[in-house]
Length: 160
Image 1 (cartoon, rainbow, N blue to C red):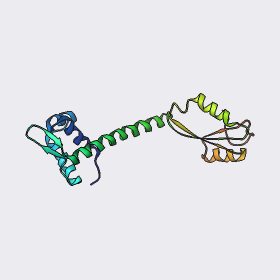
Image 2 (tube, rainbow, N blue to C red):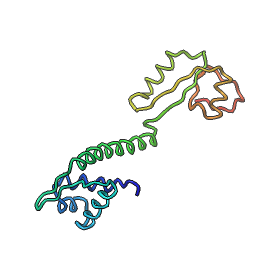
Image 3 (cartoon, rainbow, N blue to C red):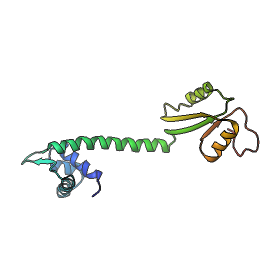
Image 4 (cartoon, rainbow, N blue to C red):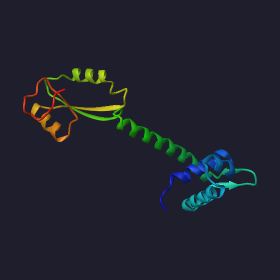
């Protein structure tokens, strides 16, 4: 059985709500479906995760450990989704920049600062290349952006 993140979410909800009834309401599930989900998770893990009392449910030590890790995993999953969205909108990611020796490192840093790459979560990887190398890197996609003082006509590249 592969790990089902929903089952971890169910376990966290039962622990936070202190019982199956309120957790089922919170998750918009039937109590039976929630109980089945937790039993399946316990079978998968191979240990009891919850102590079920008459009026209250509490995590076992193994259950609490899994709950703590599930919360961290959930936070990481949300961060991963946010990062993917930001990259998709061009607000984060990696930018591979090549520049010829005619463009100084100070000029590159100033351009990156003015563009706000750091504030937007964009990591710039900068390399100095000779003009022919820069052209080749741009044409093959090894560089996303090239900085040069002059690019001869007929290179197959667009100036901006």
